Image 1: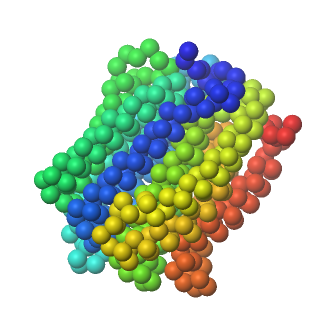
Image 2 (image 1 turned 90 degrees about the vertical axis):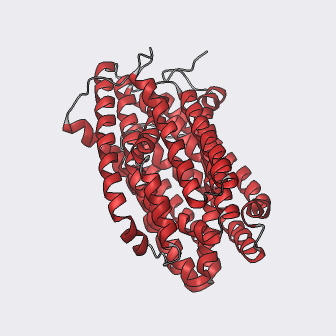
Amino acid sequence: MQIKLSDHFTYKKLLRFTLPSVMMMIFTSIYGVVDGFFISNYVGTIPFAAVNLIMPFLMLLATVGFMFGTGGSALVAMLLGRGEKERANGIFSFLVYVLAAVGIIFTVLGFVFLPEVSRMLGASEEMLPYCVMYGRIVLFSLTLFMLQISFQDYLVVAERPKLGFYTTLAAGCTNMLLDAFLVGYLSMGVTGAALATCISETVGGLIPLVYFVMPNGGTLRLGKPYAAFKPLLRAASNGVSEFVSSVSMSFVSILYNFQLIAIAGENGVAAYGIIMYVDFLFMALFIGYSMGISPVISYHYGAKNHMEVRSVLRKSLFVIGASGVIITVLAETLAYPMAIIFVSYDIDLLELTAHGFRLYSFAFLLCGFNIFGSAFFTALNNGMTSAVVACGRTLLCESSAVLFLPMLLGSDGIWLAIVLAEIMALALTGYFFMKNRARYGYAWWE
Protein backbone atom coordinates (compact mmCIF):
# COMPACT_ATOMS: atom_id res chain seq x y z
CA MET A 1 0.00 0.00 0.00
CA GLN A 2 1.13 3.55 -0.71
CA ILE A 3 2.48 5.33 2.36
CA LYS A 4 0.84 8.68 3.08
CA LEU A 5 2.39 11.68 4.78
CA SER A 6 -0.45 11.55 7.29
CA ASP A 7 0.42 7.99 8.43
CA HIS A 8 1.98 7.02 11.74
CA PHE A 9 5.56 6.04 10.97
CA THR A 10 6.98 2.87 12.52
CA TYR A 11 10.64 2.03 11.87
CA LYS A 12 9.59 -0.22 9.00
CA LYS A 13 7.34 2.37 7.38
CA LEU A 14 9.90 5.13 7.95
CA LEU A 15 12.64 3.14 6.20
CA ARG A 16 10.31 2.13 3.35
CA PHE A 17 9.24 5.73 2.74
CA THR A 18 12.76 7.19 2.81
CA LEU A 19 14.40 4.32 0.88
CA PRO A 20 13.69 5.78 -2.60
CA SER A 21 15.30 9.09 -1.59
CA VAL A 22 18.29 7.26 -0.11
CA MET A 23 18.67 5.08 -3.21
CA MET A 24 18.30 8.15 -5.40
CA MET A 25 21.18 9.91 -3.65
CA ILE A 26 23.34 6.77 -3.63
CA PHE A 27 22.79 6.25 -7.33
CA THR A 28 23.50 9.92 -8.01
CA SER A 29 26.84 9.52 -6.26
CA ILE A 30 27.58 6.28 -8.11
CA TYR A 31 27.21 7.86 -11.53
CA GLY A 32 29.31 10.76 -10.23
CA VAL A 33 32.00 8.21 -9.37
CA VAL A 34 31.72 6.73 -12.87
CA ASP A 35 32.09 10.23 -14.34
CA GLY A 36 35.30 10.74 -12.37
CA PHE A 37 36.56 7.27 -13.27
CA PHE A 38 36.40 7.91 -17.01
CA ILE A 39 37.97 11.38 -16.82
CA SER A 40 40.78 10.22 -14.54
CA ASN A 41 41.61 6.99 -16.38
CA TYR A 42 40.91 7.97 -20.00
CA VAL A 43 41.81 11.67 -20.08
CA GLY A 44 44.50 12.24 -17.44
CA THR A 45 45.38 13.88 -14.13
CA ILE A 46 45.44 17.52 -15.32
CA PRO A 47 42.01 17.43 -17.04
CA PHE A 48 40.64 15.57 -14.00
CA ALA A 49 42.04 18.25 -11.69
CA ALA A 50 40.61 20.97 -13.97
CA VAL A 51 37.10 19.47 -13.84
CA ASN A 52 37.28 19.24 -10.06
CA LEU A 53 38.50 22.82 -9.89
CA ILE A 54 35.53 24.24 -11.84
CA MET A 55 32.92 21.90 -10.36
CA PRO A 56 32.39 23.91 -7.12
CA PHE A 57 31.47 26.96 -9.21
CA LEU A 58 28.94 24.98 -11.28
CA MET A 59 27.42 23.54 -8.11
CA LEU A 60 27.36 27.04 -6.62
CA LEU A 61 25.05 28.16 -9.42
CA ALA A 62 22.81 25.14 -8.89
CA THR A 63 22.37 25.80 -5.18
CA VAL A 64 19.26 27.90 -5.78
CA GLY A 65 17.58 24.64 -6.77
CA PHE A 66 18.30 23.26 -3.31
CA MET A 67 16.91 26.42 -1.72
CA PHE A 68 13.63 26.39 -3.63
CA GLY A 69 13.31 22.62 -3.31
CA THR A 70 13.85 22.23 0.42
CA GLY A 71 12.35 25.55 1.50
CA GLY A 72 9.43 25.39 -0.92
CA SER A 73 8.60 21.73 -0.23
CA ALA A 74 8.54 22.38 3.53
CA LEU A 75 6.11 25.26 3.01
CA VAL A 76 3.94 23.30 0.56
CA ALA A 77 3.85 20.21 2.81
CA MET A 78 2.86 22.33 5.81
CA LEU A 79 -0.02 23.88 3.80
CA LEU A 80 -1.16 20.41 2.74
CA GLY A 81 -1.12 19.40 6.40
CA ARG A 82 -3.46 22.32 7.07
CA GLY A 83 -5.77 21.21 4.25
CA GLU A 84 -4.96 24.14 1.90
CA LYS A 85 -4.38 22.07 -1.27
CA GLU A 86 -5.24 24.73 -3.86
CA ARG A 87 -2.97 27.33 -2.29
CA ALA A 88 -0.20 24.75 -1.97
CA ASN A 89 -0.38 23.99 -5.71
CA GLY A 90 -0.38 27.69 -6.63
CA ILE A 91 2.71 28.39 -4.52
CA PHE A 92 4.43 25.26 -5.86
CA SER A 93 3.82 26.42 -9.46
CA PHE A 94 5.04 29.95 -8.77
CA LEU A 95 8.26 28.72 -7.17
CA VAL A 96 9.01 26.42 -10.10
CA TYR A 97 8.51 29.23 -12.65
CA VAL A 98 10.74 31.61 -10.69
CA LEU A 99 13.44 28.95 -10.40
CA ALA A 100 13.41 28.34 -14.16
CA ALA A 101 13.86 32.07 -14.83
CA VAL A 102 16.77 32.25 -12.39
CA GLY A 103 18.38 29.24 -14.07
CA ILE A 104 18.32 30.92 -17.49
CA ILE A 105 19.92 34.10 -16.09
CA PHE A 106 22.66 32.10 -14.34
CA THR A 107 23.39 30.18 -17.54
CA VAL A 108 24.02 33.36 -19.54
CA LEU A 109 26.15 35.00 -16.84
CA GLY A 110 28.12 31.83 -16.17
CA PHE A 111 28.89 31.31 -19.85
CA VAL A 112 30.26 34.85 -20.20
CA PHE A 113 32.41 34.97 -17.07
CA LEU A 114 33.67 31.36 -16.95
CA PRO A 115 37.28 32.10 -18.07
CA GLU A 116 37.69 34.81 -15.40
CA VAL A 117 36.13 32.58 -12.75
CA SER A 118 38.47 29.71 -13.67
CA ARG A 119 41.51 31.94 -13.24
CA MET A 120 40.20 33.22 -9.90
CA LEU A 121 39.85 29.60 -8.71
CA GLY A 122 43.55 29.03 -9.42
CA ALA A 123 43.48 27.34 -12.83
CA SER A 124 46.87 27.22 -14.49
CA GLU A 125 47.23 27.98 -18.19
CA GLU A 126 47.37 24.23 -18.81
CA MET A 127 44.15 23.62 -16.85
CA LEU A 128 42.21 26.66 -18.12
CA PRO A 129 40.99 25.28 -21.50
CA TYR A 130 39.60 22.17 -19.79
CA CYS A 131 37.82 24.25 -17.14
CA VAL A 132 36.17 26.51 -19.72
CA MET A 133 35.26 23.74 -22.14
CA TYR A 134 33.69 21.51 -19.48
CA GLY A 135 31.92 24.37 -17.71
CA ARG A 136 30.35 25.97 -20.79
CA ILE A 137 28.91 22.69 -22.07
CA VAL A 138 27.45 21.76 -18.69
CA LEU A 139 25.92 25.24 -18.29
CA PHE A 140 23.47 24.46 -21.12
CA SER A 141 21.64 22.02 -18.83
CA LEU A 142 21.90 24.17 -15.68
CA THR A 143 18.22 25.23 -15.64
CA LEU A 144 16.94 21.67 -15.97
CA PHE A 145 19.47 20.49 -13.40
CA MET A 146 18.21 23.11 -10.94
CA LEU A 147 14.65 21.96 -11.61
CA GLN A 148 15.68 18.33 -11.12
CA ILE A 149 17.18 19.15 -7.72
CA SER A 150 14.04 21.03 -6.71
CA PHE A 151 11.64 18.38 -8.03
CA GLN A 152 13.27 15.66 -5.94
CA ASP A 153 11.87 17.31 -2.81
CA TYR A 154 8.49 18.07 -4.36
CA LEU A 155 8.07 14.45 -5.52
CA VAL A 156 8.34 13.34 -1.89
CA VAL A 157 5.67 15.89 -0.93
CA ALA A 158 3.53 14.54 -3.79
CA GLU A 159 3.96 11.07 -2.22
CA ARG A 160 5.84 9.87 -5.31
CA PRO A 161 9.37 9.33 -3.94
CA LYS A 162 9.83 6.30 -6.21
CA LEU A 163 9.45 8.52 -9.28
CA GLY A 164 12.34 10.61 -7.92
CA PHE A 165 14.45 7.47 -7.75
CA TYR A 166 13.44 6.30 -11.23
CA THR A 167 14.28 9.76 -12.59
CA THR A 168 17.73 9.62 -11.05
CA LEU A 169 18.14 6.07 -12.34
CA ALA A 170 17.32 7.19 -15.88
CA ALA A 171 19.62 10.22 -15.68
CA GLY A 172 22.42 8.18 -14.12
CA CYS A 173 22.26 5.38 -16.67
CA THR A 174 22.27 7.99 -19.43
CA ASN A 175 25.39 9.58 -17.96
CA MET A 176 27.26 6.31 -17.46
CA LEU A 177 26.46 4.93 -20.91
CA LEU A 178 27.42 8.19 -22.60
CA ASP A 179 30.64 8.38 -20.55
CA ALA A 180 31.56 4.90 -21.73
CA PHE A 181 30.69 5.74 -25.35
CA LEU A 182 31.92 9.32 -25.68
CA VAL A 183 34.96 9.19 -23.39
CA GLY A 184 35.90 5.50 -23.37
CA TYR A 185 35.06 4.52 -26.97
CA LEU A 186 35.18 7.72 -29.03
CA SER A 187 38.00 9.27 -26.93
CA MET A 188 36.28 12.68 -26.82
CA GLY A 189 37.97 13.52 -23.51
CA VAL A 190 36.61 16.34 -21.35
CA THR A 191 34.18 17.37 -24.11
CA GLY A 192 32.62 13.91 -24.07
CA ALA A 193 32.34 13.89 -20.28
CA ALA A 194 30.67 17.32 -20.33
CA LEU A 195 28.20 16.24 -23.03
CA ALA A 196 27.35 13.11 -21.03
CA THR A 197 26.66 15.23 -17.95
CA CYS A 198 24.65 17.81 -19.91
CA ILE A 199 22.40 15.21 -21.56
CA SER A 200 21.86 13.27 -18.33
CA GLU A 201 20.87 16.44 -16.45
CA THR A 202 18.41 17.25 -19.23
CA VAL A 203 16.82 13.81 -18.82
CA GLY A 204 16.73 14.25 -15.04
CA GLY A 205 14.95 17.59 -15.31
CA LEU A 206 12.45 16.72 -18.05
CA ILE A 207 10.97 13.53 -16.54
CA PRO A 208 9.55 15.13 -13.35
CA LEU A 209 8.64 18.29 -15.30
CA VAL A 210 6.43 16.24 -17.62
CA TYR A 211 4.89 14.47 -14.60
CA PHE A 212 3.96 17.72 -12.89
CA VAL A 213 2.67 19.34 -16.11
CA MET A 214 0.45 16.43 -17.17
CA PRO A 215 -2.67 15.39 -15.19
CA ASN A 216 -1.26 12.95 -12.65
CA GLY A 217 -3.99 12.41 -10.07
CA GLY A 218 -1.52 13.23 -7.34
CA THR A 219 -1.20 15.92 -4.71
CA LEU A 220 0.81 18.46 -6.75
CA ARG A 221 0.51 19.67 -10.35
CA LEU A 222 1.98 22.63 -12.21
CA GLY A 223 -0.69 25.12 -13.18
CA LYS A 224 -1.79 28.64 -12.41
CA PRO A 225 0.73 30.24 -10.05
CA TYR A 226 -0.09 31.92 -6.78
CA ALA A 227 2.14 34.89 -7.59
CA ALA A 228 2.92 36.61 -4.31
CA PHE A 229 6.11 37.94 -2.82
CA LYS A 230 5.43 36.67 0.71
CA PRO A 231 5.43 32.89 -0.03
CA LEU A 232 8.45 33.38 -2.32
CA LEU A 233 10.30 35.08 0.52
CA ARG A 234 9.05 32.45 2.97
CA ALA A 235 10.29 29.58 0.81
CA ALA A 236 13.62 31.31 0.13
CA SER A 237 14.20 32.14 3.80
CA ASN A 238 13.19 28.65 4.87
CA GLY A 239 15.46 27.01 2.31
CA VAL A 240 18.30 29.45 2.88
CA SER A 241 20.05 26.87 5.07
CA GLU A 242 20.45 24.48 2.12
CA PHE A 243 21.47 27.41 -0.08
CA VAL A 244 24.03 28.61 2.47
CA SER A 245 25.21 25.05 3.06
CA SER A 246 25.73 24.43 -0.65
CA VAL A 247 27.42 27.80 -1.15
CA SER A 248 29.61 27.11 1.88
CA MET A 249 30.52 23.65 0.60
CA SER A 250 31.56 25.14 -2.73
CA PHE A 251 33.57 27.82 -0.92
CA VAL A 252 35.20 25.22 1.33
CA SER A 253 36.06 23.10 -1.71
CA ILE A 254 37.80 26.12 -3.20
CA LEU A 255 39.75 26.56 0.06
CA TYR A 256 40.76 22.89 -0.02
CA ASN A 257 41.99 23.28 -3.59
CA PHE A 258 44.02 26.40 -2.73
CA GLN A 259 45.62 24.65 0.25
CA LEU A 260 46.30 21.47 -1.69
CA ILE A 261 47.85 23.27 -4.65
CA ALA A 262 50.24 25.00 -2.23
CA ILE A 263 51.09 21.83 -0.25
CA ALA A 264 50.73 18.92 -2.69
CA GLY A 265 50.34 20.48 -6.17
CA GLU A 266 47.97 19.15 -8.85
CA ASN A 267 48.15 15.65 -7.34
CA GLY A 268 46.62 17.05 -4.15
CA VAL A 269 43.70 18.57 -6.08
CA ALA A 270 43.19 15.28 -7.93
CA ALA A 271 43.26 13.32 -4.64
CA TYR A 272 40.73 15.66 -3.08
CA GLY A 273 38.48 15.27 -6.13
CA ILE A 274 38.55 11.49 -5.73
CA ILE A 275 37.81 11.73 -2.01
CA MET A 276 34.85 14.00 -2.74
CA TYR A 277 33.40 11.47 -5.18
CA VAL A 278 33.65 8.71 -2.57
CA ASP A 279 32.58 11.05 0.24
CA PHE A 280 29.33 11.82 -1.53
CA LEU A 281 28.74 8.10 -2.05
CA PHE A 282 28.85 7.45 1.69
CA MET A 283 27.07 10.65 2.74
CA ALA A 284 24.26 9.92 0.28
CA LEU A 285 22.54 7.83 2.94
CA PHE A 286 22.32 10.76 5.37
CA ILE A 287 21.34 13.29 2.70
CA GLY A 288 18.75 10.98 1.14
CA TYR A 289 17.25 10.04 4.49
CA SER A 290 16.97 13.69 5.54
CA MET A 291 15.42 14.60 2.19
CA GLY A 292 12.91 11.77 2.43
CA ILE A 293 11.79 12.37 6.00
CA SER A 294 11.58 16.18 5.93
CA PRO A 295 8.13 16.41 4.25
CA VAL A 296 6.78 13.97 6.85
CA ILE A 297 7.96 16.26 9.64
CA SER A 298 6.57 19.34 7.85
CA TYR A 299 3.19 17.71 7.29
CA HIS A 300 2.73 16.63 10.91
CA TYR A 301 4.01 19.96 12.18
CA GLY A 302 1.43 21.71 10.00
CA ALA A 303 -1.25 19.32 11.33
CA LYS A 304 -0.09 20.09 14.91
CA ASN A 305 0.61 16.41 15.52
CA HIS A 306 3.54 16.96 17.88
CA MET A 307 3.59 13.36 19.12
CA GLU A 308 4.33 12.09 15.61
CA VAL A 309 7.05 14.71 15.11
CA ARG A 310 8.62 13.55 18.36
CA SER A 311 8.36 9.91 17.34
CA VAL A 312 9.94 10.52 13.94
CA LEU A 313 12.78 12.50 15.54
CA ARG A 314 13.55 9.77 18.06
CA LYS A 315 13.59 7.04 15.41
CA SER A 316 15.66 9.19 13.03
CA LEU A 317 18.41 9.81 15.58
CA PHE A 318 18.74 6.06 16.17
CA VAL A 319 18.84 5.28 12.43
CA ILE A 320 21.47 7.96 11.79
CA GLY A 321 23.67 6.91 14.73
CA ALA A 322 23.69 3.25 13.70
CA SER A 323 24.31 4.16 10.06
CA GLY A 324 27.23 6.39 11.02
CA VAL A 325 29.07 3.52 12.70
CA ILE A 326 28.49 1.16 9.77
CA ILE A 327 29.52 3.72 7.14
CA THR A 328 32.71 4.64 9.00
CA VAL A 329 33.80 0.99 9.21
CA LEU A 330 33.08 0.52 5.49
CA ALA A 331 34.93 3.70 4.54
CA GLU A 332 38.04 2.74 6.49
CA THR A 333 37.98 -0.76 5.01
CA LEU A 334 37.41 0.33 1.40
CA ALA A 335 39.71 3.38 1.30
CA TYR A 336 42.48 1.70 -0.71
CA PRO A 337 40.22 -0.32 -3.07
CA MET A 338 38.17 2.80 -3.86
CA ALA A 339 41.33 4.79 -4.61
CA ILE A 340 42.56 2.06 -6.98
CA ILE A 341 39.42 2.51 -9.12
CA PHE A 342 40.54 6.03 -10.01
CA VAL A 343 44.34 6.12 -9.94
CA SER A 344 45.78 2.63 -10.25
CA TYR A 345 48.13 4.10 -12.90
CA ASP A 346 49.90 6.45 -10.43
CA ILE A 347 51.25 4.88 -7.22
CA ASP A 348 52.10 8.18 -5.53
CA LEU A 349 48.64 9.62 -6.16
CA LEU A 350 47.10 6.31 -5.09
CA GLU A 351 48.90 6.34 -1.73
CA LEU A 352 48.08 10.02 -1.15
CA THR A 353 44.38 9.44 -1.89
CA ALA A 354 44.02 6.31 0.27
CA HIS A 355 45.85 7.90 3.21
CA GLY A 356 43.80 11.08 3.00
CA PHE A 357 40.51 9.22 2.82
CA ARG A 358 41.32 7.06 5.87
CA LEU A 359 41.76 10.24 7.93
CA TYR A 360 38.77 11.96 6.33
CA SER A 361 36.45 8.98 6.98
CA PHE A 362 36.21 9.48 10.75
CA ALA A 363 33.86 12.39 10.01
CA PHE A 364 31.12 9.92 8.99
CA LEU A 365 30.55 9.07 12.65
CA LEU A 366 29.09 12.53 13.27
CA CYS A 367 28.14 14.22 10.00
CA GLY A 368 24.77 12.48 9.76
CA PHE A 369 23.51 14.19 12.91
CA ASN A 370 24.53 17.60 11.58
CA ILE A 371 22.99 17.01 8.14
CA PHE A 372 19.75 15.81 9.70
CA GLY A 373 19.73 18.65 12.23
CA SER A 374 19.73 21.29 9.50
CA ALA A 375 17.04 19.43 7.51
CA PHE A 376 14.91 18.99 10.65
CA PHE A 377 14.66 22.73 11.33
CA THR A 378 13.99 23.43 7.65
CA ALA A 379 11.12 20.93 7.87
CA LEU A 380 9.76 22.88 10.86
CA ASN A 381 9.89 26.02 8.68
CA ASN A 382 12.58 27.51 10.91
CA GLY A 383 14.96 28.52 8.16
CA MET A 384 17.07 30.79 10.35
CA THR A 385 18.07 28.06 12.82
CA SER A 386 18.64 25.63 9.96
CA ALA A 387 20.86 28.19 8.23
CA VAL A 388 22.94 28.77 11.37
CA VAL A 389 23.47 25.02 11.79
CA ALA A 390 24.36 24.50 8.12
CA CYS A 391 26.51 27.61 7.82
CA GLY A 392 28.24 26.94 11.12
CA ARG A 393 29.09 23.42 10.02
CA THR A 394 30.65 24.31 6.70
CA LEU A 395 31.54 27.97 6.40
CA LEU A 396 32.65 28.53 10.01
CA CYS A 397 33.85 25.17 11.33
CA GLU A 398 35.24 23.50 8.22
CA SER A 399 36.76 26.57 6.57
CA SER A 400 38.55 27.60 9.78
CA ALA A 401 39.77 24.03 10.29
CA VAL A 402 41.12 23.69 6.74
CA LEU A 403 42.92 27.04 7.04
CA PHE A 404 44.58 26.50 10.41
CA LEU A 405 44.94 22.75 11.02
CA PRO A 406 47.54 22.29 8.23
CA MET A 407 49.75 24.76 10.11
CA LEU A 408 49.95 22.22 12.94
CA LEU A 409 49.74 18.88 11.11
CA GLY A 410 50.86 19.62 7.54
CA SER A 411 49.01 17.80 4.78
CA ASP A 412 47.30 15.51 7.32
CA GLY A 413 45.66 18.62 8.74
CA ILE A 414 43.79 19.11 5.45
CA TRP A 415 42.25 15.62 5.63
CA LEU A 416 41.48 15.87 9.36
CA ALA A 417 39.88 19.31 9.03
CA ILE A 418 36.49 17.77 8.29
CA VAL A 419 36.66 15.65 11.44
CA LEU A 420 37.35 18.65 13.67
CA ALA A 421 34.63 20.60 11.85
CA GLU A 422 31.99 17.89 12.46
CA ILE A 423 32.87 17.76 16.17
CA MET A 424 32.42 21.52 16.51
CA ALA A 425 29.24 21.45 14.40
CA LEU A 426 27.72 18.68 16.54
CA ALA A 427 28.00 20.89 19.60
CA LEU A 428 26.17 23.65 17.70
CA THR A 429 23.47 21.26 16.45
CA GLY A 430 22.94 19.85 19.95
CA TYR A 431 22.57 23.34 21.37
CA PHE A 432 19.75 24.23 18.96
CA PHE A 433 18.00 20.92 19.51
CA MET A 434 17.93 21.60 23.24
CA LYS A 435 17.02 25.28 22.87
CA ASN A 436 13.98 24.65 20.67
CA ARG A 437 12.56 21.52 22.30
CA ALA A 438 9.84 23.40 24.23
CA ARG A 439 8.90 25.60 21.27
CA TYR A 440 8.16 22.63 19.00
CA GLY A 441 7.36 19.98 21.66
CA TYR A 442 9.70 17.32 20.25
CA ALA A 443 11.85 16.37 23.27
CA TRP A 444 12.86 12.88 22.18
CA TRP A 445 13.17 11.45 25.71
CA GLU A 446 9.57 12.26 26.66
